[in-house]
Length: 327
Image (cartoon, rainbow, N blue to C red; front, side, top):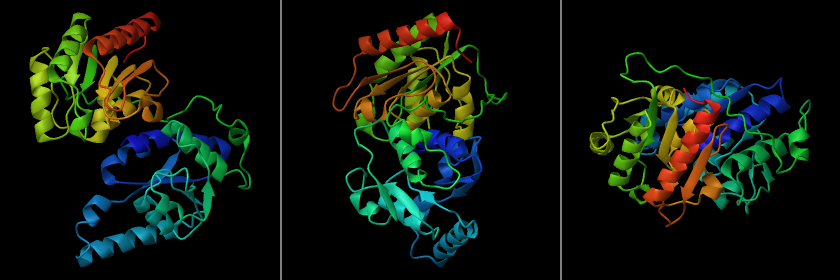
């Protein structure tokens, strides 16, 4: 999900550089709601590769893959940009049957994927993922007819990223007590986790500031953790939420505290005040970035302390109060 969020400003740039262009998106179905909310995206193609790769021995899988290839080629695209830089994304980019732009061998996450592109561009891997996607798109369009090159000329001094998401209103069926803050304590790998007692203490601090803690989850074990954290801070755990429903909840939050996970980046993309906790990744490459106040703490093997996170929450909350930001 984080890869999808980091590529959203690229679509905004493409619309600005080539106003006449139709912009479509190819993505896993679980994350299709995000590009579908972008004002510049016309059509979202769903690629259930995680499902298909376990059923390659079945005729139905090959039929479904053929139907997706047909739908891609039917559009007769001028160009496909692979912003993910993986072998699987490069292979499917090629299936559209047109020119494919991507990162060169020294810029890409999986070097073998670069060999599948017709156009390769050098973009420093030391830049933030959002900046890398934007510079790739700008370079790919630098010679396109009717497209501005202003973004390319600016180099790394890019304008503020525009994630292009429409503001959403939380579902009225959810028992959200305003004002509320969102905690996101779950991640795809245990190496990213932060101690549960810390989460409970952060939640109690937010409640002391008049914010009702809402703890998000996505699977059975995550729900159990969310319940324990909520019990420790008198918070609330919603039922299972789709990506679009969770995005709507984040859109109304006064403040978000989350691990280095997709929904924390979604909250930042929505302009929410966000404190990101990094325990297994360098925030310089995928740190919290958006139009609201934010902080990224920790790093690879550098779990931030409770005091550090608490201070960042206080700082972001104080800034937010001073400018009256919130849901």
